[in-house]
Amino acid sequence: MNLLLHRTYLKEGTNGVLFYKGAFLGFTIELPWLENKRSISCIPEGVYELKPRFSEKFKHHLLLKNVPERSLILIHPANDAKKELRGCLAPVSSLTGIGKGLSSKLIFQKIVSLCHQAFERKETITLTIKS
Image (cartoon, rainbow, N blue to C red):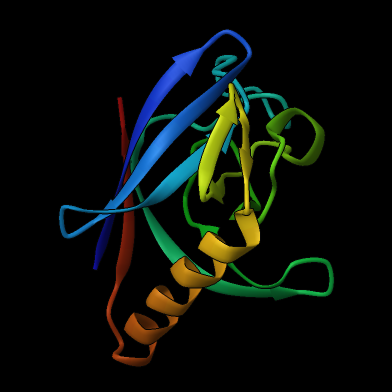
């Protein structure tokens, strides 16, 4: 299973559009591109394997594997990249500005459900990020 993220880089943040099998899934928000600096930049473009992860803070969420020079890059709910993200990605139902959106938890649950169904089928899930 492959998810595709098309990004738009802006000075204040990074907005994206997420697709599965060519169909629109939702939008994403991230921090701006700042040369992959830990905790303040979005991650480099590339293809990343997704794995299920659980924490008390985010409950069930997704982990991106093998991000260059980074660790614990997650897909989790957030509606404001600058206030709620430290290099992670957040899906949102609609964009309200640069690095900002609405109803993150709704679209996040849809994506996690889709991925967990694939995990149960023993599929490898990848996220391709490009501009």
